[in-house]
Length: 328
Ligand SMILES: NC(=O)c1ccc[n+]([C@@H]2O[C@H](COP(=O)([O-])OP(=O)(O)OC[C@H]3O[C@@H](n4cnc5c(N)ncnc54)[C@H](OP(=O)(O)O)[C@@H]3O)[C@@H](O)[C@H]2O)c1
Image (cartoon, rainbow, N blue to C red; front, side):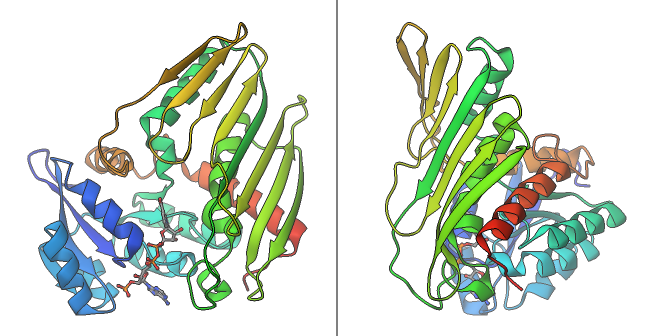
């Protein structure tokens, strides 16, 4: 565990699109630094380091895991490889922050969580929204209960991309499809606000690759609450989340999964919008939390505990079962 006067040394495994945002925000954190980057292409890792002030470049992933100076590894491959590389990193005793979804199904997630437990090493799913100021504010507000019981959660996430059979979003071998990639956010919203549903309905459309192009979900709860959730790669959608309560409603403005403002409307119709003034892309919040966990010698996050990742995947598995989607 690094002493308090030592910076936490991060390694990035797979410097793709999201890894750039992660590295950009890492620059805003004082007690951490980008130590090493590993790509299947050494030149790419070197170029990434030039931009984001990394120290060491590796042309393969295993060398990064073996680097004794690395405290934490951020895994940003397509979903299909999250399990393999997480298991390898944990085996090497590295704390792992793995991109969402943690795995392709519950069996994979369970294997990853068990490995973290067995090695007594920190593992967290990088569901960054959970750590953002607006989302934490929302959860605190709901906990206080001033708007009464939550009656419904309506959340969507949609954008359009031209079909590319080899692209990460469309190729089932890479874990492609709307549900696992972006449907995870509306599901996350329902799970974090309403908990596990008692009944799930879902229907989907599919690309010719077999990956789901859109997925409409309805979660029903014994207490009468309902969640209407949607993901689509076929069109732009508002990408907002609306939480309706007995005595008011709360709207997480677009795009609800990233730093954004919240509009509160009380029973009289009075509106109040809060802007949280986030100046980064927002990835620094999950990273700062992770750094703290490392310094405290923790193996699990109290905000994003293993059980939450387990439930999130369980819900996606249930939806997959209903729509007839299997990855292998
Ligand atoms: N938290 C967020 O806001 C957010 C946003 C977007 C994506 N994500 C998650 O981050 C992960 C990566 O998404 P991305 O959009 O960054 O993907 P991306 O741009 O395609 O990058 C993925 C990287 O993985 C590596 N890789 C290893 N094996 C690969 C293979 N067989 N095919 C393709 N790439 C392979 C490649 O790096 P090298 O070739 O350099 O090794 C590639 O650059 C996904 O799991 C996604 O869910 C999260």
